[in-house]
Image 1 (cartoon, each protein chain N blue to C red):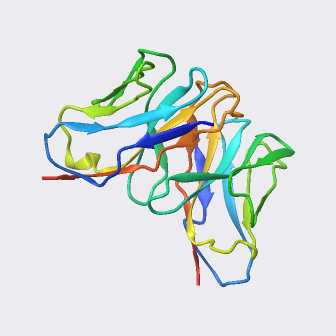
Image 2: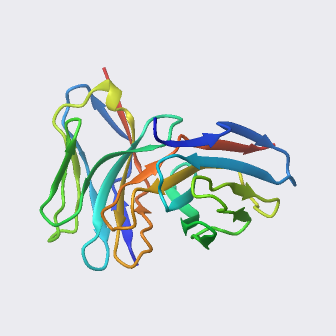
Length: 113
Length: 114
């Protein structure tokens, strides 16, 4: 079946540091890949997505590249801000899954001033 | 503004009581979903519906029930059979039925059993 593994947190960084949150997946065929962000007490918001191999999703300074050869979709940002403090979820939707999303367990990011 | 609304934001329930969580969307989406979120466990799928008057069990449906009588509404009932109902509940809908389509989430309802 489909599965997503993302790095365990929490991750604590200083403002302007470089961020990487690792995400690897297992799926049949070519899934679509997503990063969602959840701010405290809120629902999830789509951060970015990629739908085929070598696609790069980007939004708000965050980037992730769909790497089929390593089955990865790592999230990166060159310079984090305090306002980026949130939980980040990697997710996939695979073929034959009835369009359900499979989520990783989430990574808590805290950015200190 | 288009979006998904969930109410109430906070809900308290006594043990042994059923409670219904509301989810409404005005995005004209066919597919809707209910997830449960517990600390450190990510999101787990409870029920989903791809069309009006049809729904399927997700990974943790025991102790929950749903209905889908209208396209825009997908209420979730947490029954007294759910052994550990205290959690954050998220409703979502899909912009389409394709593999690339985006899933949108509501703001969530936090249920606490006293």
